Length: 347
Image (cartoon, rainbow, N blue to C red; front, side):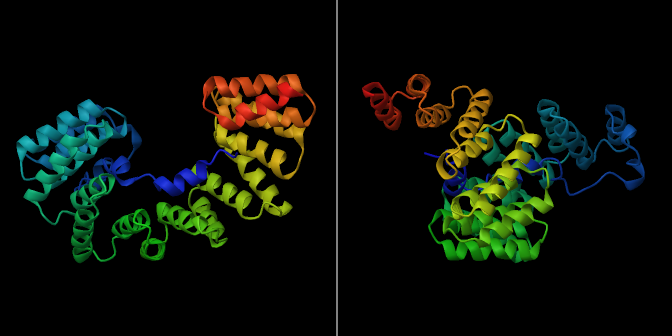
């Protein structure tokens, strides 16, 4: 009856982070170091002057596009990338950056078209190969993805993203051993690769192996404010040793810290409630945390149902009935809530 957010991660995998982040740094060129000295220079005028130095240089338009995209101005960024391609239609970084920007706008078909154009221009351009491999994986075109990733590794044997993506493919194909091996290689190549540790943790957690805890701890060390790392660590603690009070206390501490970082994180409030309900039989505390989850997510039908169980255990049958009815209002086919409602009505 737990809200299995963590198991959903196992099924769907760590969200691909490369496409979402690459647009801010996908350009092979960098503004001259002397030009980027203080944040005050990071302005529209600064980047316009950067282009005026040589309007025929496509890399300068890509630089300004990256600045626009970093500030969430996708339309302006796309315009600059079009100018870059007008200046040089063979400039692979512009094709790659535009594909990433199109991905952010969920224009997936144009994104793929631009990646293919990039690879026609520069067949060994690693950012385009990686992005195209990601799109193949999204479409479950695994042989094509492997081909792209192998090309990357022939040119860059230490590319951690390529190993990570191979791990994703193996995981989706049910080959847990090769998935773990690929993820392990990714973090060996890049010991600071956050997504690699998350993927390793999820891979081991899927087999209920407590080695997962260490990988989530490392991810948390790399990004102390990461809700993802803390949530996976807490859930792993909660599920692996539910009879171990020390593990449960550690899990609750992680959930509390998540809520300090993100007060609207309904799943963390819910899971605290579940620990009190299922493992500690502290029904008042359980109802309190389920209420917090509902405050954060008013249509959280699992939270209504579990709060109903807590109230029923406290003997507050009328309140339990109200919660079961709310759970069914949001999810009419919620069988467990229907059974519970019938039970309290019969009482």
